[in-house]
Image 1: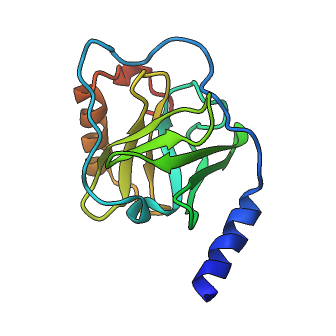
Image 2: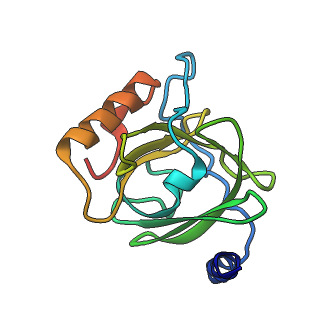
Length: 167
């Protein structure tokens, strides 16, 4: 009961609002190249606080230095709350196939976990259309080797890693 109350309290703190669509613009990946999400872990393994270290300049609030709080609701929703130097925003999703978060409302981005390390300290996030993506780490847990692995996975999935900001 206490856990359900804390979850509701956390979701209430996230606030409500319309999903933020990915800005229209270029794709940062070669769409002819196959893309895959990881099957490692669950949404619960990703829940909690992260910090974006590198990002594509498409979501106005997903920039290097942005804090990301991934909160899971009891109804299967996942709220991605962004707070950082470029502003704040929220993306509401529901879990899809493993490693995939489907927009809860029309117009939001479909977020895929392209790669995450074994201990869920670093992750590469992207979208199938390539309009956005970023590398995020747990606070205080960044490392050059895991960042390198995340960059390799973005490249493997067709992303142009030379266009990341914060690199």
